Structure formats: C-alpha cells, structure tokens
Image (cartoon, rainbow, N blue to C red; front, side, top):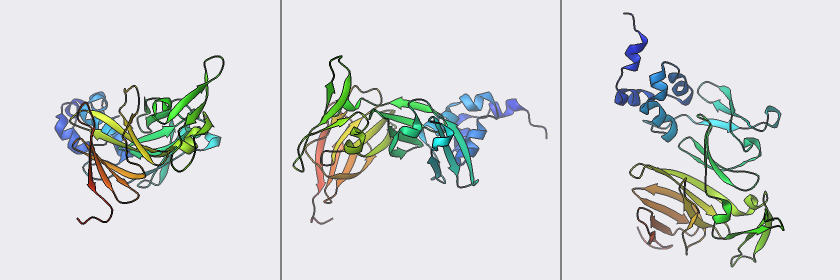
Length: 259
C-alpha cells in the first residue's frame, strides 16, 4: 500500500502525542522532519518543550569542549552511542555553570552570574529574573552607574561578603530545580542558595525572585498540585503553597517526629 505525506499530516494530535511520547530524544527530533505539520503541531512541540513522555527516557550526556567553540555543546545518546553537536545561543554555553536540569531544560549561570533556562534540543532560551533581585544580593555600582560587583548578605555562619560579577555564582548558588505547573501553564524554578541554604523561587517573566523565609539548610525540592515541598538537611519538610497571590507555609515534619 502506498502511503502519501498528507496521510501523516492528517493524523489526530492525540494519536501523535501517544506516538511521540514513546520515542527517545534523537528519534523525536527526526520525527519533526517527516512533514511540516508534525514539526509545527501541538503534540511535537509539547513533547519537546514540556517533556510529556510516557515513561522516563534514556538519559543523554550533555557536555562542552573548549576546542569546539564557546557556543558549541554536545549531546551524547546512550541509546545510539553517538554524540550530536549543538549550537546554543549567547551567552557562551562553555563558560556557564550548570546548576540544575529537568524536563529537558538546563538551568545555567553565566559569567555575570545571571541565570537562564536552556533547552539543548530545541535551542530555546528563557531568561530568569536578575541575580540582583535575590533578597540576599545587593549590586555595587561604579562611578558610571555600571554594576561591577555584588554584596551578599551574611548569616549566622559568617559575615557579609563582596564578590565580582563572575565569582558570585561560586558562593551564591547551591542547586536549582525546574517544575512545570500544567494547571497554571507555567514553569517554576526553585533555587537553593546561600547564605545558609535558603530558598527562593521565580517563574519566567517575573521581575524578581521571591524569597521563602524563614527556614534554611534546604537540600531538595519537589512540586505537586501547586505545592512546593522542600526538605532540609535536618529532615524537616516544609510545604509552600504557590498557587495564590500570597505564599503560605506549613511545616509537615520535624526531625525526630514519627510518620
């Protein structure tokens, strides 16, 4: 039986979604070249942008190489045992720090300690609120009004400190988490940062990072049904309700408690 291209184009989006969600990353990218309607369709773009897979995909290794250029990166497929070279947007990916990854996106910090979401497969990039909007960071300006360093608030563990634009990321960032809230149709980035392992969050398009006091020593996070659950190094679990205009907090477990 002869199959013509228009038959592929007329397949319902829900069927395409079921098909695409079973593909490994390299095969999903190839699927977009079958016909224009597949590449532009909701099923294809949703799978690539939001990671709506049926089951966990075989991980790919992401790495850079100075000899390949500042904007070049590589994705090594463990399934195919081969590497794919990628060209990613500015600022140079080779000079950024990787502070988190999820749903096919990387959370990076560039040489000015500014953060971006980068999708290495689609080459999409989303800027996050400036690092100077983190509650514990204060910019220091020169005589021309240009930021040349940052002042980071101290904690009970030490005094305040001053860091250059590039060095701030060494001291401020601990770990970043990316979640997708399907009901609100938005990404949420949770950031564990110093001083003292505190927690802030932001969504792309926000003007600033929102600090979640008063707890500290956070080590891990997960998001479900509008609630951000965070666990501390001491075993305390704190739930933050991010669904309303005002964030509410509830402690669910304390060290030494049962259940």
